[in-house]
Image 1 (cartoon, rainbow, N blue to C red):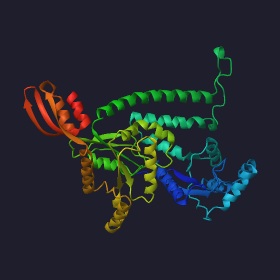
Image 2 (cartoon, helix red, strand yellow):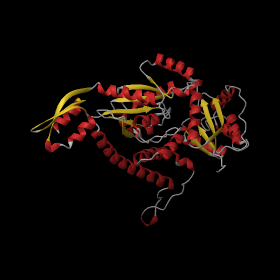
Image 3 (tube, rainbow, N blue to C red):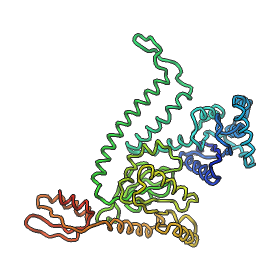
Image 4 (cartoon, rainbow, N blue to C red):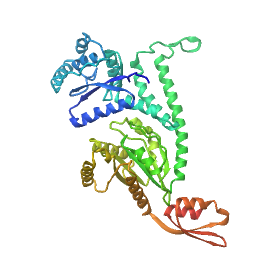
Length: 456
């Protein structure tokens, strides 16, 4: 068994004036979970209260010196030189903000140096370059961390293409700051003229690759649209919610499918559609969707629009929330904001407060259950790992979709008996009788499905 330790990381975060301390701490803790999902070990945090991010290095010179010590680089005169390049107002702001620190002692220098710096903000290419120059190690902002997790977890062609498009768009403005490719290739017929610089060539290659991926996605989206059209008249429920809220575990419990389950952020990126088990009549389809997160890069939301269309076209959204997480109310808000952004604000929604088994012993659980139901009386408080809770949710879903069913008869001619299987899978068959021109099925089904079967 290997004794190799995971790469060590330090988190850098700035509390801005419009950010409450609780939200700030929750965001930093969440970045720590994102780091662990990447296989990193967070060994230190460098935090600061400032009026704004330092224009050059995110944090002021004092905190930058602490960060240097964490990576094994002694503070030197470079800090003072950097400050000399700032204008007077920037120097005053840095000094004033250093006074705003909470007085906590600097983090203990780890025995092994830090290998990666994670910044809990979206930073500019120049800020990333300056931090990398000062520390000598890789710097990743929050968007870069999320994109790398998405890249590693994408399995289907659709998810891989979606993630690569966003990653390439993120990379383009950072090419200039990489410091590579300043030379120009010989251009023109006979090799005369300035030609393209390596930077321009790289940008053109990226644009071409994005165009290629976009065409591939358009083709795949057409296939997905055809598949969804076949399910148009079926009863459909979509699981939505914050990443790691337990959606995939609930999906497995409701459908008996072997979907991927892991205690990681963004373990699921691909939409999976499975029938509810035990099977309901008419059949109810359940779909799992990509999880959301605070400060989710806008490009990812737009890129995964085709995947999230499952939520738009569902008859019911199961909004799954980790009820044991102290920050779950903010997570609930984030999911609601993203659903509104993709146009799913008006889709019927059922709040599922999951992981109630994690709040403590039986007494603590009863207290938590009563508190949650007092706040959200229409919610379902449960654990996806308890069969009795899953059965109760299953019955609730069946009852929900049964409310929209109507009774009617469908005549199926003897030469159209291929419709028989569809009727039994998508309708509740109450009876059948035979006559000269075919079989008449007495069924309960959605009105639209009933009309389509009659017209078939």
